[in-house]
Length: 364
Ligand SMILES: O=C(O)CCC(=O)C(=O)O
Ligand SMILES: [Fe+2]
Image (cartoon, rainbow, N blue to C red):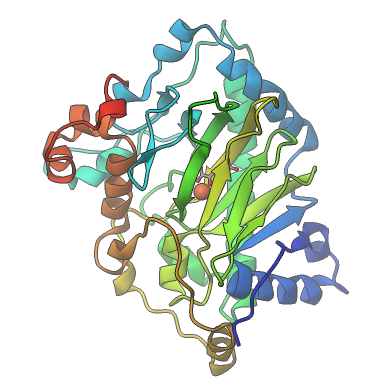
């Protein structure tokens, strides 16, 4: 019998600091991670005023003059950071109906000739000029630093929930410097009569954990259960949505579940939806097949009881089994942003797009 789900569980982070209820949190986490792959986290340890400031900044960022946005367009960046105009990103070969900025935690480019190309993926983000949106960069960096700390704490709790030593996941982070994490600010406009409602098509996230701030009250995010049914994950104020990426699924031998999800555009006559996802990365040069985690028979049994994953409507990251994680990420970026790939990674671009740029992918 597959353990299926019809809603996404809500976990209260304040239980972690409560000695009488911590075990309850760990047990709820175990269920969420194995059977759902998604959860809401209430009372996260991120300053409420910074969360609110990010929510307030999101529409202002998109309302900047087009010229200010295009100054930092993604095609300028070999690291795939910056502004993507509406309709220039692809999921499963179909255009996503969203506009977005890709930012990241601070990082200095460390690629040198002779090193693998994927090392170039990490480097400085592009930020809008201070005069056009005062305080935004400092606020977002403060926000990202807190979510990054949470992401490391959370991965320790998750290890514990799977019966592992809480420090064991450190093996997956950079040993010779920081790991860079990516974050986006996304706008889903109301579709016009003729446009599709694919805000973003069905996909898995790539890395370890995603921490998503739903920055407006719109529904639209949906997650796919084991039977293939789409379950709503509407915004709950004061929470993050946390989900498991393909890298974490792979290192846990499928015990932690990466769950396919998508976003439907806001309803006609509504207003734009905004969201701010943070993607926790792992070391670029690591190949997941080279690190083995040992799970207890009890935990392996919980995976068995869940049942097989059903037919899932999503792009996949099967390469995690073989390639260095940096290479897997680079391939993902190339498929999503072919115009950036054409400029900065011409050989890989030709490999994935032998016919040249897809029609809507040109110019940005
Ligand atoms: O906007 C959202 O709510 C989710 C976005 C998402 O899944 C992604 O960008 O990976
Ligand atoms: Fe996602």
